[in-house]
Length: 336
Image (cartoon, rainbow, N blue to C red; front, side, top):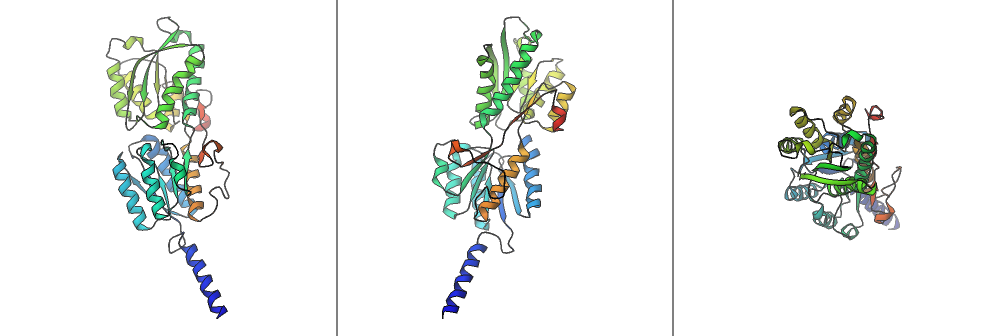
């Protein structure tokens, strides 16, 4: 009788372990990108998720949420019904994180949120199997601002009207996105912190951080009465900077411009002098950290097991943050 009980106990333990992975023992991951129209997410993060998943020997299904939180909610329901082992979610609306967390909690599936951080205070604490992988949202704006301040101080001729004040326009990312909001504030704050006055001539958000939208916006700005007053173009990402650069080229304007992401095209434009600087948003390591945590969570071990990632103590060990790096004409070749 004891042997039978022991055998049953072993079987139950094996079945419990099997519940963490698919029938063939391979971890299955349900993942999304908030929109495939995003240059950075679809051009850098998504390919790395796919290639690193193959390297790790796990299965990943990445879907396009098409900029719709409702679509994402349905996609998460579908992943849960399919029995994935872990969810890897790029929120459409950071304020809706609670909905996704509740779905994962109800299904008892580990959840890794990445790139877009929950904006509702305390929501991450409602589930013990949810973590975040991304960046310090303010850091990119701080670094971008420091680059711009240094270049402004080194180029007196950038002050077109000689008033000692920076007249700028700003291409902002998605309204409400933590990165867009923080980059916008910190990039400008760097000037005021350095004792340099600023004047905002115009600001325009883009829900998809779109190159096309930014190009149209910049072209419109260059037809206004203040077109010849613009001394600096600040862009929350490289994709929008590309649109602005094309508009300036078409209108025969040459205005200093800075982006964020360090996309390959941005590095090339720094080399040709079309872009003055960018900030490396390390999508490769964001993707790798996301999958490392996801696989560990699916296997029921510490999410940092076997990795070099560090949890952020400021968020009570719920987040891994990948650092940004300044990219200028002096070092852009290091990143190509």
